[in-house]
Length: 88
Figure 1: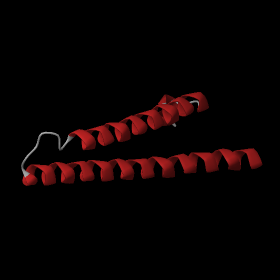
Figure 2: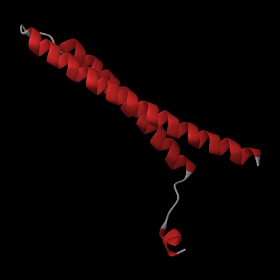
Figure 3: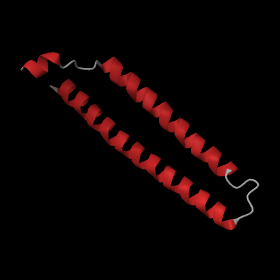
Figure 4: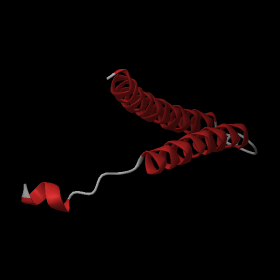
């Protein structure tokens, strides 16, 4: 009970703000990856460098997709809990 007394719960407003910031951040990251992808091959003559840059950008894009999926799953849990509370 001592631990619970020190624990401060987040408000729905704070959660909504985090959700909004997270969505903006993920969109910004996706845009940055797209921009990097378009600029990655400018002025590069080596096929090996092009292939390496493409592989790195593919990896980063895949990582972002996994983060977005995890975020979506967490948000779905939150929405489900809110709906369950409203039903009660």
